[in-house]
Length: 262
Image 1 (cartoon, rainbow, N blue to C red):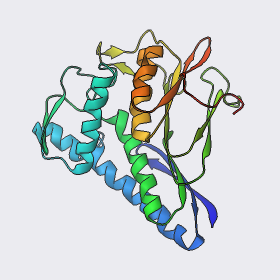
Image 2: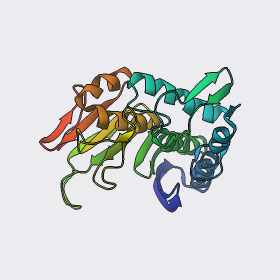
Image 3: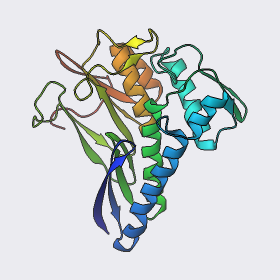
Image 4: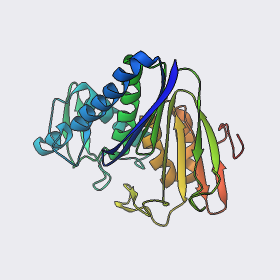
């Protein structure tokens, strides 16, 4: 049993980094299985190229694959739970889709970027386990997904500090996911679907969520950024915790473990 790692650039317009604990004779299967799953799911969920998602939008609906339907169902659930702070069509607002059994009716240009990357990270981690890894940590463009025994220490950067600053918080990730949204790298890029406008003035500099899955962390971190401290109760309903970074410093949710020196 050994620890192995690999990194690829240009995956989903970003990077893919995978660290595994596995027997050496299984590593050759693990990394290709991860990449294959990521590429397959990009072909289903991307809005930046021809995909199943873009075809559903063009056609106004249809019968989605199980994977796309799962993400759509989560999008509706999160939209309702967050009062629209998370939205599957943030530039449109209102009702974006309806699920009718195995079919979907699309009412607006869907943008699942706020969930798809986390979902793909989850599935990539599962692919690694199925290919023979004992434990795995997937970093897909900053969205983390982990499976298997043990834990990983996740260092959360200071949104106001220099690039070489000490982490502002350290999280212990066992099985689940971590995601961050904020101003540091992309500026004020998040839309507030409730106003159909940029999230301005921001209630926070950054939001980080640790959740039972990377999909949930991905979606909830955007809602927490927009909702501020009121979002902590929403996180609790999904078994998640988070940190809101304000100009006065980090504000953790009541049940969050960890800290600057965890």
